[in-house]
Image (cartoon, rainbow, N blue to C red; front, side):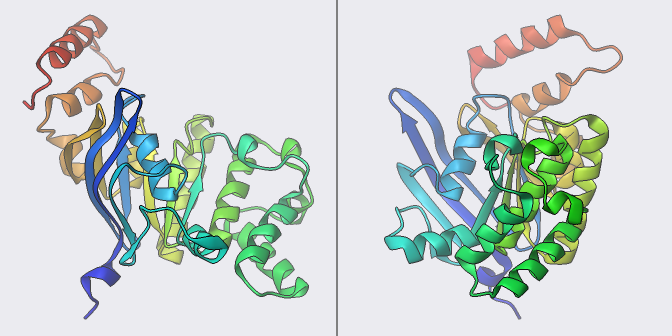
Length: 278
């Protein structure tokens, strides 16, 4: 039987981050099972991206614990070896892949760079692995020799996913990773991610304000409001029977027949005034 540590890919406890007088994240806790998909959802400014940046190591928490495979990540890494080890554990795909890809380096070059950092492969093995990764995300030889500016938005996001997978991470964080794409391309990328999770067993942490995306791609969800967890549980259950007023507000804010923006604005003001669970 697997131990609890082996079954849990990521464990976050009591995470806190303060910027000046603003408490961006306050006592956030959740866990991600190995090979599962967890959504972090909320409006802009709720703390979801700050939480993701702390988990991946781009921000240092003021308090709390972040563990991958039982290893603590909340403190700053000591030396290059530990930095590389942490980078392998968790990779991140951002909203705008063009900003995260070096415009001077070909697709093949950016993926080979990751392989060179993390694995002792010869040139032939690196080329073979690049081809495997590009095939995994639905790209081929033509895209391998292209610069990012020569690719579409969907193709660039596929490259960003392939580059992240090159490190063979335990957890892949996707921060609004389909928000900048057309709806049809979003569907393609989401289907691609579902196939990758099924085949590679990577745990997904999906950060999004889009409840339709969260419903499609995640098993469980954490709802953040003003930096705090207000509701969590299986995605289907939370979105079908929300217990907290803020979660209900998020669902009511999605445009549909009979949608009443004035009533939603009134509900938002009432929630802000009370700031208490329903």
